[in-house]
Length: 197
Image (cartoon, rainbow, N blue to C red; front, side, top):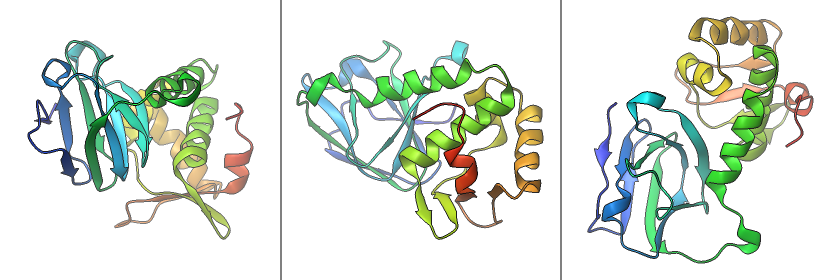
Protein backbone atom coordinates (compact mmCIF):
# COMPACT_ATOMS: atom_id res chain seq x y z
CA UNK A 1 0.00 0.00 0.00
CA UNK A 2 1.09 3.54 -0.68
CA UNK A 3 0.83 5.96 2.25
CA UNK A 4 2.87 8.49 4.19
CA UNK A 5 3.35 8.35 7.95
CA UNK A 6 1.54 10.81 10.20
CA UNK A 7 3.35 9.79 13.41
CA UNK A 8 3.77 12.41 16.13
CA UNK A 9 3.03 15.25 13.69
CA UNK A 10 4.80 18.40 14.78
CA UNK A 11 2.13 20.31 12.86
CA UNK A 12 -1.41 20.26 14.19
CA UNK A 13 -2.89 20.42 10.67
CA UNK A 14 -2.27 18.08 7.76
CA UNK A 15 -3.52 18.62 4.22
CA UNK A 16 -3.93 15.76 1.75
CA UNK A 17 -4.71 15.84 -1.95
CA UNK A 18 -7.36 13.52 -3.37
CA UNK A 19 -6.06 9.94 -3.43
CA UNK A 20 -3.25 10.51 -0.91
CA UNK A 21 -3.16 8.36 2.24
CA UNK A 22 -1.46 8.71 5.61
CA UNK A 23 -0.70 6.04 8.21
CA UNK A 24 -1.57 7.07 11.74
CA UNK A 25 0.56 5.37 14.37
CA UNK A 26 -1.43 5.27 17.62
CA UNK A 27 1.71 4.77 19.73
CA UNK A 28 3.17 8.12 18.70
CA UNK A 29 -0.04 10.13 19.14
CA UNK A 30 -0.30 12.42 22.19
CA UNK A 31 -2.68 11.09 24.84
CA UNK A 32 -6.09 12.69 24.97
CA UNK A 33 -6.07 13.79 21.34
CA UNK A 34 -8.05 12.91 18.27
CA UNK A 35 -7.99 13.85 14.61
CA UNK A 36 -10.85 16.00 13.37
CA UNK A 37 -11.80 16.40 9.74
CA UNK A 38 -11.67 20.16 9.17
CA UNK A 39 -12.74 19.92 5.53
CA UNK A 40 -13.23 17.22 2.93
CA UNK A 41 -14.13 13.54 2.96
CA UNK A 42 -11.84 10.76 4.17
CA UNK A 43 -11.88 6.98 3.94
CA UNK A 44 -10.54 5.26 7.06
CA UNK A 45 -9.05 1.83 6.44
CA UNK A 46 -6.94 -0.88 7.99
CA UNK A 47 -3.33 -1.07 6.71
CA UNK A 48 -2.84 -4.74 7.62
CA UNK A 49 -1.92 -7.03 4.72
CA UNK A 50 -4.39 -9.66 5.94
CA UNK A 51 -7.35 -7.34 5.49
CA UNK A 52 -6.14 -5.82 2.20
CA UNK A 53 -7.13 -2.23 2.99
CA UNK A 54 -10.53 -3.00 4.50
CA UNK A 55 -12.67 0.14 4.75
CA UNK A 56 -13.86 0.96 8.26
CA UNK A 57 -15.50 4.35 7.72
CA UNK A 58 -15.95 7.45 5.62
CA UNK A 59 -15.60 10.68 7.60
CA UNK A 60 -16.59 14.24 6.70
CA UNK A 61 -16.18 17.74 8.07
CA UNK A 62 -16.65 17.76 11.84
CA UNK A 63 -16.17 13.99 12.34
CA UNK A 64 -13.47 12.85 14.73
CA UNK A 65 -11.12 9.90 14.59
CA UNK A 66 -10.14 8.78 18.07
CA UNK A 67 -6.53 7.67 18.10
CA UNK A 68 -6.64 5.93 21.48
CA UNK A 69 -8.71 2.99 20.21
CA UNK A 70 -6.81 2.10 17.06
CA UNK A 71 -5.25 -1.19 16.06
CA UNK A 72 -1.64 -1.49 17.21
CA UNK A 73 -0.62 -1.51 13.52
CA UNK A 74 -2.26 1.89 13.12
CA UNK A 75 -4.93 3.08 10.76
CA UNK A 76 -4.84 4.78 7.37
CA UNK A 77 -6.75 7.83 6.21
CA UNK A 78 -7.26 8.39 2.47
CA UNK A 79 -8.41 11.71 1.01
CA UNK A 80 -11.50 11.08 -1.14
CA UNK A 81 -11.67 14.83 -1.76
CA UNK A 82 -9.08 17.50 -0.81
CA UNK A 83 -8.73 16.96 2.92
CA UNK A 84 -7.61 18.92 5.95
CA UNK A 85 -7.17 17.09 9.27
CA UNK A 86 -6.36 18.75 12.57
CA UNK A 87 -5.15 17.31 15.88
CA UNK A 88 -7.49 18.34 18.68
CA UNK A 89 -8.12 17.54 22.30
CA UNK A 90 -10.57 14.71 22.64
CA UNK A 91 -13.94 15.72 24.02
CA UNK A 92 -16.62 13.26 25.05
CA UNK A 93 -19.22 12.93 22.33
CA UNK A 94 -22.90 13.21 23.18
CA UNK A 95 -24.55 9.83 23.79
CA UNK A 96 -21.23 8.03 23.23
CA UNK A 97 -21.49 8.48 19.44
CA UNK A 98 -18.36 7.49 17.52
CA UNK A 99 -18.27 8.15 13.77
CA UNK A 100 -15.96 5.23 12.95
CA UNK A 101 -18.00 2.73 14.95
CA UNK A 102 -21.25 3.93 13.36
CA UNK A 103 -19.84 3.61 9.84
CA UNK A 104 -18.35 0.19 10.54
CA UNK A 105 -21.74 -1.00 11.80
CA UNK A 106 -23.53 0.27 8.68
CA UNK A 107 -20.94 -1.27 6.33
CA UNK A 108 -21.32 -4.57 8.21
CA UNK A 109 -25.11 -4.41 7.78
CA UNK A 110 -24.61 -3.95 4.04
CA UNK A 111 -22.23 -6.92 3.81
CA UNK A 112 -24.91 -9.17 5.31
CA UNK A 113 -27.51 -8.53 2.61
CA UNK A 114 -28.08 -11.64 0.50
CA UNK A 115 -27.37 -10.42 -3.04
CA UNK A 116 -24.53 -8.29 -4.43
CA UNK A 117 -27.07 -6.09 -6.22
CA UNK A 118 -28.80 -5.32 -2.90
CA UNK A 119 -25.45 -4.62 -1.25
CA UNK A 120 -24.44 -2.15 -3.98
CA UNK A 121 -27.84 -0.46 -3.82
CA UNK A 122 -27.58 -0.08 -0.02
CA UNK A 123 -23.97 1.13 -0.21
CA UNK A 124 -24.73 3.85 -2.76
CA UNK A 125 -27.76 4.96 -0.71
CA UNK A 126 -25.70 5.13 2.48
CA UNK A 127 -22.93 7.13 0.82
CA UNK A 128 -25.35 9.64 -0.74
CA UNK A 129 -27.44 9.98 2.44
CA UNK A 130 -24.36 10.63 4.58
CA UNK A 131 -21.94 12.37 2.23
CA UNK A 132 -23.90 13.54 -0.82
CA UNK A 133 -26.35 16.25 -1.73
CA UNK A 134 -29.41 16.59 -3.91
CA UNK A 135 -29.00 18.87 -6.93
CA UNK A 136 -32.09 19.22 -9.07
CA UNK A 137 -33.06 15.84 -10.50
CA UNK A 138 -29.94 14.03 -9.25
CA UNK A 139 -28.17 13.18 -6.03
CA UNK A 140 -24.47 14.00 -6.17
CA UNK A 141 -21.70 12.03 -4.46
CA UNK A 142 -18.60 14.29 -4.45
CA UNK A 143 -16.13 11.48 -5.10
CA UNK A 144 -15.83 8.28 -7.10
CA UNK A 145 -14.96 4.80 -5.99
CA UNK A 146 -13.04 2.32 -8.11
CA UNK A 147 -14.76 -0.92 -9.06
CA UNK A 148 -12.20 -2.74 -6.89
CA UNK A 149 -13.11 -0.57 -3.88
CA UNK A 150 -16.83 -1.11 -4.48
CA UNK A 151 -16.14 -4.86 -4.63
CA UNK A 152 -14.33 -4.65 -1.28
CA UNK A 153 -17.18 -2.68 0.28
CA UNK A 154 -19.95 -5.02 -0.88
CA UNK A 155 -18.04 -8.30 -0.58
CA UNK A 156 -17.84 -9.11 -4.28
CA UNK A 157 -15.28 -9.21 -7.06
CA UNK A 158 -14.35 -6.29 -9.27
CA UNK A 159 -16.00 -8.09 -12.19
CA UNK A 160 -19.30 -8.35 -10.31
CA UNK A 161 -19.21 -4.71 -9.22
CA UNK A 162 -18.43 -3.63 -12.82
CA UNK A 163 -21.40 -5.63 -14.11
CA UNK A 164 -23.73 -4.16 -11.48
CA UNK A 165 -22.55 -0.60 -12.11
CA UNK A 166 -23.09 -1.07 -15.86
CA UNK A 167 -26.61 -2.23 -15.11
CA UNK A 168 -27.28 0.94 -13.07
CA UNK A 169 -25.83 3.12 -15.85
CA UNK A 170 -27.94 1.40 -18.49
CA UNK A 171 -31.03 1.91 -16.31
CA UNK A 172 -30.14 5.62 -15.98
CA UNK A 173 -29.78 5.28 -12.21
CA UNK A 174 -26.07 6.24 -12.15
CA UNK A 175 -24.12 8.76 -14.23
CA UNK A 176 -20.38 9.35 -14.22
CA UNK A 177 -18.76 11.79 -16.59
CA UNK A 178 -15.14 11.39 -17.62
CA UNK A 179 -12.97 14.05 -16.09
CA UNK A 180 -15.34 14.59 -13.14
CA UNK A 181 -14.52 13.33 -9.69
CA UNK A 182 -18.17 12.87 -8.71
CA UNK A 183 -21.04 10.47 -9.31
CA UNK A 184 -24.70 11.32 -9.97
CA UNK A 185 -27.36 8.96 -8.68
CA UNK A 186 -31.08 8.85 -9.25
CA UNK A 187 -33.09 9.88 -6.18
CA UNK A 188 -35.31 6.86 -6.92
CA UNK A 189 -32.29 4.58 -6.36
CA UNK A 190 -31.24 6.37 -3.17
CA UNK A 191 -34.74 6.42 -1.66
CA UNK A 192 -35.47 2.75 -2.36
CA UNK A 193 -32.54 1.32 -0.38
CA UNK A 194 -33.02 -2.22 1.00
CA UNK A 195 -31.78 -0.85 4.35
CA UNK A 196 -33.06 2.20 6.21
CA UNK A 197 -30.32 4.68 7.05
